[in-house]
Image 1 (cartoon, rainbow, N blue to C red):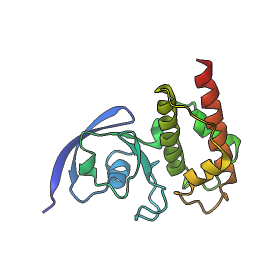
Image 2 (cartoon, helix red, strand yellow):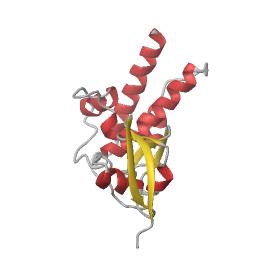
Image 3 (tube, rainbow, N blue to C red):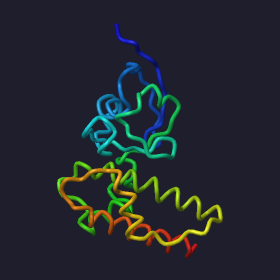
Image 4 (cartoon, one colour):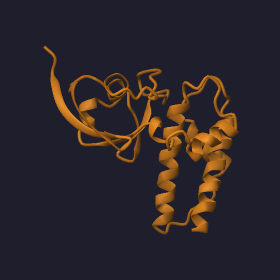
Amino acid sequence: MKDMHSITLRVNGRHHELAVEARRTLADMLRHDLGYTGTHLGCEHGICGACTVILDGQPARACLVFGVQADGASVLTVEGLADGEALSDLQQAFSDHHALQCGFCTPGFLMLIEAYLAEAEAEADAGAEAGELTEPQARELVASNLCRCTGYQGIVEAVVATARARRAQQEAT
């Protein structure tokens, strides 16, 4: 007999109610129960970062979170970054800087970086003095996710370019 639990959550701003088995991971729930297949499963041990989503404003490895733990939470997946057919600035920067090859790890990188940039913007809005994101800082940020194809240079360039553009936009307003 399966240990089922009724939960509610918001994914990319959309309300969902579902019954989920207690041992089902958030990644499996997102992919198989809700159809958000952009959340990829690589290692299923929390090491590779391919399954990274933003859970209540913080990056989280969806393979390490049980779906029942997301009851009442807000989840942002890679599908929630774009505005319809228009890519987000970060997604466009990945394209512009050739920051992907096979693309398997890309959603996890995008979500990790989006969470970091959103936190930096919130701190700047709160009056914190924010310096420009440097290449070494960007390398440290992306080091927590694994990519076997790109060598990371394009990813680092995309992160720095997006941070720079967002900062310029924030200073202009």
